[in-house]
Image 1 (cartoon, rainbow, N blue to C red):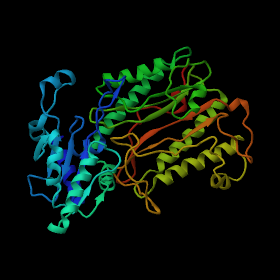
Image 2 (spheres, rainbow, N blue to C red):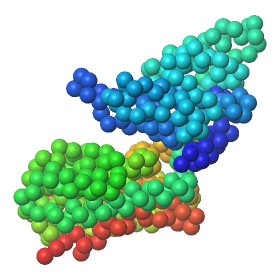
Image 3 (tube, rainbow, N blue to C red):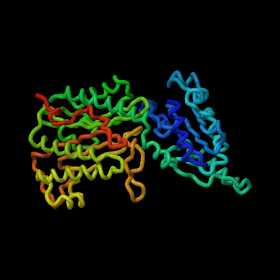
Image 4 (spheres, one colour):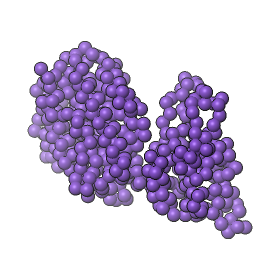
Amino acid sequence: MTSIHAQRRQRFLERLGGVAAVIPAAPQVTHHADCEYPFRQNSDFWYLTGFDEPDAVALLLPHRPPGERFVLFVHPREASAEVWTGFRWGSEGAVEQFGADLAHPLSELAERLADYLSGAEGIAFRIGKHPQVEPLVLSAWARQLDRAPRTGVAALGLVAPCPMLHALRLRKQPEELERMREACRISAEAHERAREVVRPGLNERQVQAVIEQHFLEQGARGPAYGSIVAGGDNACVLHYTANNALLRDGDLLLIDAGCSLGDYYNGDITRTFPVNGRFSAEQRQLYELVLAAQEAAVATVAPGQTAEAVHATAVRVLVEGLVELGLLSGEVDGIIERGAYRHLYMHRTGHWLGLDVHDVGAYRLGEHPQELEPGIVLTVEPGLYVSDRLPVPEDQPAIDERWKGIGIRIEDDVAVTEHGHELLTAAALKAPAAMQRD
């Protein structure tokens, strides 16, 4: 992977021009006073370096000569620390294994940073996110400004690296797409295993255990986010993660779960099916409607389209179907324009997917939506959630009790290709017949 990260750094350096970038790693986070959460690297830092240790700082310095443009500051090799928290690569490993031109102990960042930034036209650093590093960057910049009247040289401004870096991350390279196929494969298999074991009387947490065991058995780090295993009315809570209720005969079960690989690429799948293997009439009608909306939205994914168009496609199919079922009333365009459907469908139809589950990248460029391009990966996940949690708009019909407590979402991960799209999560079945059993 070293060459892949080197290619990414080169593309980023080209975008920086004469601006120097300071990209910090994630810190180690503790809980229970002194116990540490499993470490999760900052995605921007990982994208550029592949270095999976906390607190490190990467400098990308296009204004420096070759051999000085990629500098890492890292924790040093230290036996007394490594016996507690594990192996460290140290400065030597940062150069030999991760391609740094130069590497130094993290303790030297304060004294060396200003010299490395000297001569840059500007400094790219994300303010407000890295409290340990930010004062050092501001101090180095202030020193340049103080000396500018004498030297005539100073970084002209502090800019965010995010727009440049996130535009690169939005469009996945072939090797990234391959990793996402693997994350989606494991995630889809876990959903299939879960559906095989579900029966009335199980606890939601037991189903969660089946899913996450498969993630680990297949070599993933674990779940990409808090797995949602929501039976019955719990499915109407969009980010339900308690996962501690019994599964009841006659209810649906919504599972929103995906794995994260060792290099942080993610899957994100939602499936909904009857706990006892048989849809009721109302469940079947709403399920088929959500599936029709989802399939129409997936079909919209292609170069030149937009995430907004994908969402609009799903909304129109849902609203037309809900009017036909009597859960909405009125003219379809008017309902959509007023948002009079949002007590039943209150979220967007998808998001970018990559190193982060809700991945980076602009959805709009000023007044214009971001066009879909080959290499972009997004989720497509319409749903319906029928409950008393949100008030029914005054011009819409009251909800009959027979519909209440039905929550359905169907979500796939879709990569934009040259001529259309690739459904990365097709191995997780979703046809109504596949959701049922005798």
